[in-house]
Length: 274
Image (cartoon, rainbow, N blue to C red; front, side):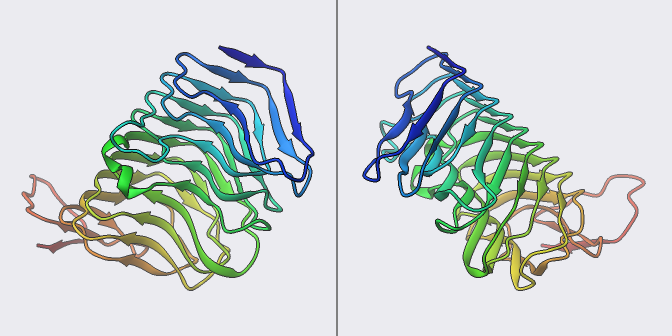
């Protein structure tokens, strides 16, 4: 299935459907399309990837929806979303046209790369990426690279940039605008999540000074935050303690959690939190 050079405009105020439903689709391709509505028309889901396999949306615009792109929907025993690619899209707007999440519950082996995730909140404090921990068994191997996450508006929280759950996340090379609502969290990691690497990201200097950069639930394993730019806007750098991993904070102090075996020639300031 290929959809290319199509514009879908919702104008009926009672519209609450899905712009494009790739349910149980394989090798689906959405390329160079626009999906939006005239207020108050709004889709329940922009693009539905629930139970889709190896499908792609690229070079497209998604707006006016509760959820921009839906991965795993609601049933951890039956729902899935495998090997899908979200690349070079604009999702949301600087004013705020997404209600709940720009991308919800990425599945297994997802790639989210080179998108502009615009966090205006006129319709609510939507998350850039949301992750329902009840579906964690179907969420893992997520690559989030080279995206802009920016254009927060409004001051009333709570708000979150990225929720993380499941196993195996690599978040790198993104430009992340600190949330302006108060309170807010940049990385919100669910309990029992494992295998997270956050590296090479940079942050804007604005945002709510009372925000939390990293919020860890209980029993988070192998959490690594290294080689990132300084997050000036975060009043609380880290809330919670991982069971294992390496974290370098804004003062360039590296803390190792869990068992630690030093290698030869190791230098610098190392804190062992065992």
